[in-house]
Image (cartoon, rainbow, N blue to C red; front, side):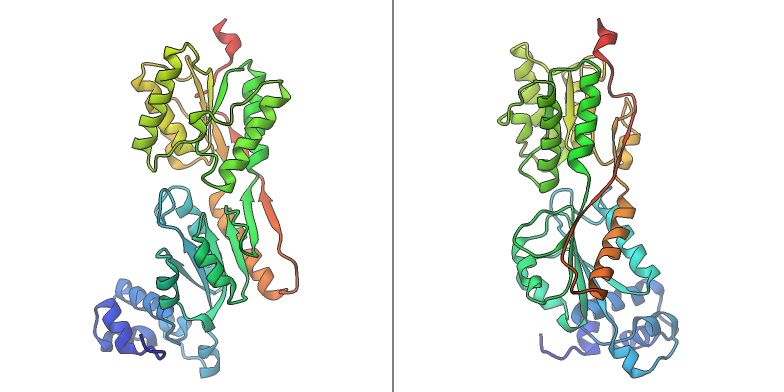
Length: 352
């Protein structure tokens, strides 16, 4: 691609005529909304200078304002559960875009994140900052750090990049949830999820460990339930079923499972059903995130409610503050979350 992006480049990228691109960017009538939005997105990604307000409303503004149009780039991995339409990550992105729109700032979501592809679709001079959602490729983060603009990382603990970091209060919430199970006389509790998958998963495991050790109970860091390798619910269901089947043969089934997120908890419920074990009569289960699917499990899933849209909105507030006060040091922010009690847990006292 040449340094200068033209309307013809945009037309070829979108698959429309140069005439349609011209009308879309000038805000003139005669182009349907879906096509206009595709053209605008392509123009921003390719670095074409235009005024987003004029393009959407047809209102004319002076050329100085038009050339100053700026963008916040949202980086979202397209692996595992981290995609725009997911019940967790997608809601965070929704909150980001809503907040950006409320302050009339353009947001562009990029999911293709090799360093080469990233550099080919962004115009560095337009970018005010980056918001990374979930685990973003380290090579991409290191590349954008060279642009010396603010970076906010949501639910990511990558230590290689100077950035503002935003998390739910993972450790404290799982501690409270595990403590609740312990207060119900559960002692054979196991954590479910790959503790090495992300900073948040590790923090949740540590919260579980804190509560167990407070009761004088030893946790096994090598428990295979703490090191699941699957990438979707089907694979996780089979892994959990296999591990628990072995535990049943050894007469060592847990009385409760503390799952790193709701998706894993749903997989655990399915695995127990396949093994003819009932929730919570045989084994209690908890999740984390309170995604929409948690409402529809049978029984209803006890979980931690993360305010996903609010987390997205908070990420925007943090980056705008950093843009305005660029001399402020980076910080790590923990958002409070709350336990939602449903029917997937029961007291061991009720089983005596």
